[in-house]
Amino acid sequence: MSMRPNVYAGGMIDRAATQRRDGAWLAARLSDPGSRLVPLWRSQNLVEGEGKAVQALRPSVGEAPWLARLLADGPAPMFLGLVEGQAHFAIDLSAEEDPVALLGLSQTRQFIDLRRVGALLPQHDGALLAYARGLAHWHVTHRFCGRCGAPAVSREGGHMRLCSQESCATEHFPRTDPAVIVLVTAGRLCLLGRQARWPSGMYSTLAGFVEPGESLEEAVAREVMEEAGVPVVRLRYHSSQPWPFPGQLMLGFTAEADQAIEPQVDSHELESAAWFSPEDLAGFKEQGRFLPDRQSIARRLIEDWLTSCEVKEG
Ligand SMILES: [Zn+2]
Image 1 (spheres, rainbow, N blue to C red):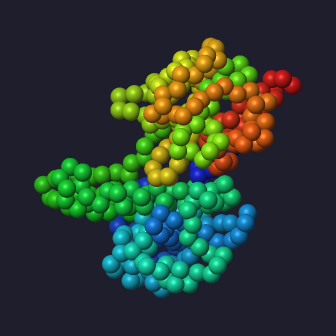
Image 2 (cartoon, rainbow, N blue to C red):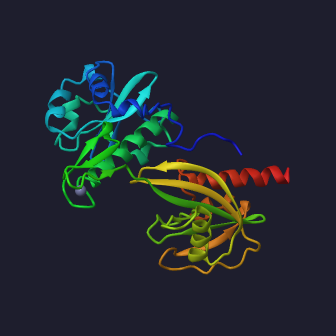
Image 3 (spheres, rainbow, N blue to C red):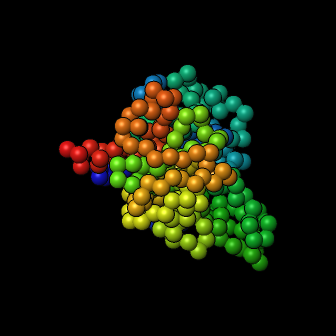
């Protein structure tokens, strides 16, 4: 199995978790003209380039005369970390009606849904933009203290929100929701399913959220049993992937079933599920079927399994 990181992982960023608690240090980074900004607008990320030559656009503080106004009355910038010693701050421009005019963007520089370009971006850029998007989403959805309802304010460069009610003062930390995703195999067959809401013809691995009081192994076994009625054995961890749509951490596994028993689909979760051989998958296109796109860990699990089948069969 190759150890190449999944899309949205593998960023070359030092999160500087100790320094980011220091307000004076952060303020100095934010006024350094060489520091970089990672703008977001209504859940979209800023990129430049066309076709496959797309990359993250990160204007410097020195190139952002509009920053002072935003700092005065906009949401607090989020310190992402240091990249080759340069501070990077995510900044949410969602309150702006026209970010294109604000930033002076051209046709090849645009805000875009990260999912549309994730597989095309350089590894580091994808990780940086996913990080910014995930953190910004958490701030937007956690403006108030979940304990007492008072406004919560950003602290530690956006890595904590503190309840403003003195008697409460609860500290809230960015959340990421663990979800397991698993490719179940039985010999030369793999189990794929489809949800009714997916694009017609798409089949993928089984997945679901980890519940309180549950280990990852238990979550995998439960999801496969609930969705397809197949008992699994021999679980193996594969790799993980930040998935900021909006805030999951995907934990990828492979698992084996002793037999390719007929799946019993739970219609709340899946529309259908079936076992497929490598030859079946090779014929998908002709049947109007397809696999999830290349940025997903689901596709990675399937591709790695196909490779292992080829290796075994020489
Ligand atoms: Zn509170």
